[in-house]
Length: 130
Image (cartoon, rainbow, N blue to C red; front, side, top):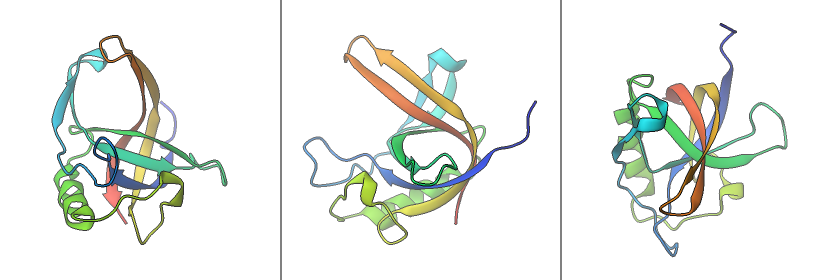
């Protein structure tokens, strides 16, 4: 196994359909494609993958077994984003998002035939609020 790859980024909830507000529901979902793991849904992450100027926004895959403090993140998200107008992901900063540190586990793209959408995720471990 390789060395841990630690990174930083900003997290925020998904926006409700049509924009205008954040969705503060963070469901626990089961991912059958990755060994029936339970993960926290409804969160986006903006990170540069440790390459300055190369920011990306993806779904944040937070496996609850690898992230025992996930409830602290949920509580912080509900507190910070309640009744807040959404911003564009590329404008994320310390004032309008929650800064986190995490171990980078990789990225995945998964096509859903029923929704005809590709879901792009960054997988994290040990996510903590800075």
